[in-house]
Amino acid sequence: MPIATPEVYNEMLDRAKAGKFAYPAINVTSTQTLHAALRGFAEAESDGIIQMSTGGAEFLGGQHNKDMVTGAVALAEFAHIVAEKYDVTVALHTDHCPKDKLDGYVRPLLAVSEERVKAGRNPLFQSHMWDGSAETLSDNLSIAAELLERARAAKIILEVEITPTGGEEDGVSHEINDSLYTTVDDAVRTVEALGLGEKGRYLLAASFGNVHGVYKPGNVVLRPELLKELNEGIASKYGQPAGSKPFNFVFHGGSGSSAEEIATALENGVVKMNIDTDTQYAFTRPVADHMFRNYDGVLKVDGEVGNKKTYDPRTWGKLAEAGMAARVVEACGHLRSAGTRIK
Image 1 (tube, one colour):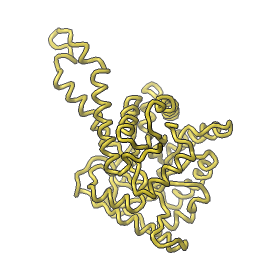
Image 2 (cartoon, one colour):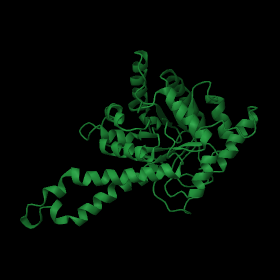
Image 3 (spheres, rainbow, N blue to C red):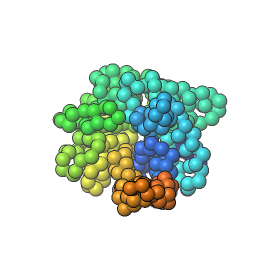
Image 4 (spheres, rainbow, N blue to C red):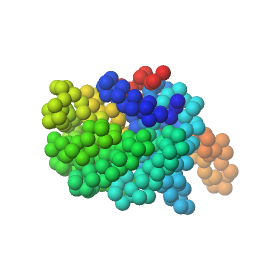
């Protein structure tokens, strides 16, 4: 079952938390980057998560109409077909969706899955993200509660971002400052609104200094040990045993993170880590290399005819796929998911 059923997706997340590893969540924007992600997972013998942001879905919808829902549904349906050829299990997820795009993205996609479930089928996507980090926590959690109820009915897991991640992604931006750290009080208010699974399962993108985009190690102060404090605070308040990990955490803005920071995050309950910036570069770098090396072949210079074999998109596209797949394999190693696929 290459695309996870709701039951298998829950099993994947449980296995990750118990085994102290996380699934790379790879952003895709085309059928080619989808294949690169699937190939990387297969080569690493790792299950994984494939996701589309609002900007990615708009791009997939085509530049004539730029329809996010069309783009997301089309690639998801494509994934259900081609993933059969890869010996791994993947979940389909939608990445960051702010308040002003909910009605044009997540809510219509929930409706698609609701209809599928009513007809006795599995949801199209296995999880959706609501990014309310630009809202007050009260408004954020109020919307999250509404979405969680719908997601639960459609057998979908909701991801919520309760406090800001720095940097910018698809038009949602936050300054890099001391507000990028979730507090125990934030976590308590989240549980009061969303429960601990009884109202529906959710993934929590808590902030521990994370920043989207490109940065070098040392430029951003990550505190992944903060996740332990959040888990301990909730476990203590709700009478859970010492060492419990009530939350399923998501690691956003991980580009440039050190191996030690990633390891600490995994020990403290991170089950999903978003990877976009690094895989974008891994996809583009081989293309740039090919173009520079074959300048007079990919271009018709000085009235010449060029070289069809060098400008054929399949030629440089294969290089791009291989480059991105290799970066996915690397991510699986960093996150300890390599070799953990469900047989």
